[in-house]
Image 1: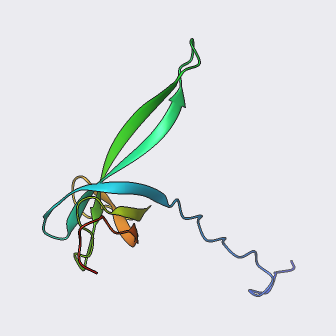
Image 2: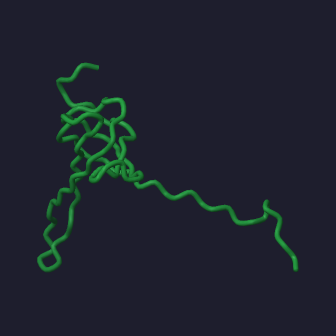
Image 3: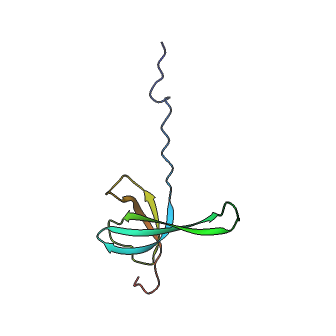
Length: 99
C-alpha cells in the first residue's frame, strides 16, 4: 500500500467570495445595516427588463455606513435570525455627509 505524503495531497480551494454592491436604506439598528440590492431580470414572455430588489441585513461592526451609502457586502455565518451578511467596505459615501 502506498500512501501519499501530506504535501502531495490536494489542497482544499478557498471558497469564492460572492461580493454584492447595494445601497444602505437603514442604519438605525446597533451594528446592523439594511442593504437593498437591485438587479435586472428579463420578463420570460415579453422580454422587457424588470427591476427587482432584495434587502439584506448586514453586520457593521464599526458603524461606518450611513443611509444612502453604496456598500459592498459578503456572506458570512448566521449572526442572528435574519443577519447573514457582513460589511466589507463603503464604496461611495452619500452626499451631504462629513468626510
